[in-house]
Amino acid sequence: MKYFSYLLLATYFITLSPEVTLAHILTTDDAVGAVIHIEPKDDPIANAKSTIIIDLKDKNGHFKYTNCTCNISISTNGKNIFSQVLSRTNSTKTVDFIFPEIGSYKINISGTPDNNESFKAFNLNHLVEISKSNKIDKLQESNSNSDLKNKSTTIWVSTHTVHLVGAFFLLGVILYSIIKERKNK
Image 1: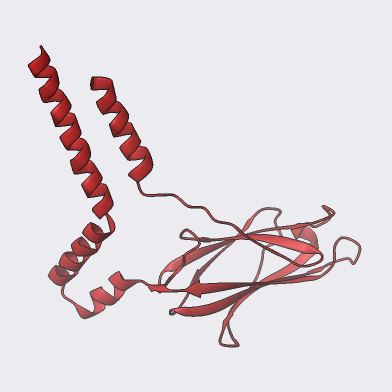
Image 2 (image 1 turned 180 degrees about the vertical axis):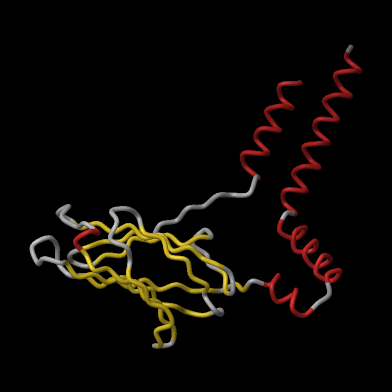
């Protein structure tokens, strides 16, 4: 019975622990493809720092960042709100950005070769929907610290209810098995 308890404990932590999700979006055109990942968990939050991770490759293996004038731009409602030239080092690119509000954004990655023989010019678009806002920041602006602590605790409890129920169930099973073992001795 002791091993059964350990097995249940291990199962609980494997299945009910907070999930780690790494989603990667592939955006392509005829010449070049980009794998785009946005932290946190491809679900960026308005008014909080997001990291856009970009890995560019072409079908023929000729693409090199050192031979490319690559740019990233972000727009919303047809208005460009961010633009940056990507570095020419041969590695995955990261760009930090704060989406200013909930809404739809277009990430555009474009590049032109320094010599026309290495790869074709490309223009890649990826749409991002921001549906959450950094509520903690808004609470800090509008409430006192004690109100913030109460609301943060409520948010934590509501998002971890499954974990709490599972923990109490597992604790009950362990206590039951300990009591049963002692009675059998």
